[in-house]
Image 1 (cartoon, rainbow, N blue to C red):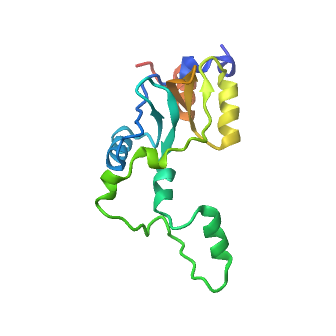
Image 2 (tube, rainbow, N blue to C red):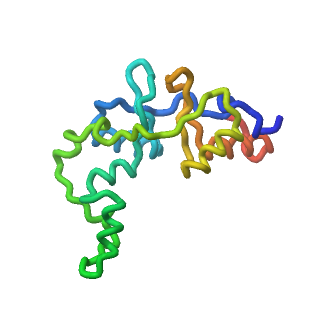
Length: 164
């Protein structure tokens, strides 16, 4: 079957790691490191998808200005440019437990329905410049689809990878 016509449910990962709004920053980073997932869905106890959290959201809470303000400031000739603002973060140990996912959750995210096609999913990924999107059914998280999931499916179909 043509992969572009396959439903997302055929290719997505059903048991993707998730976090709740009350997850601490420390625990969030531990989950990201342990699972190698850098975008995690944020869900309520009943699996209702509230948003996503990713490493960019983590970095943004430590930046002194928003990206647009930073760009304006950089254009000013009398302001010293800081090339590595992501490396010069002001941190304290308490932040690991005081900052919660609720503080950094992105509620302006894209998702896709499980009966959508892989072609539709890929268009959404390109349009929004993302490589991973949550998959929903009636506002409930049912899985996650990544570009890697699509590639793995294609490689298995062509016997480049064997099924697990």
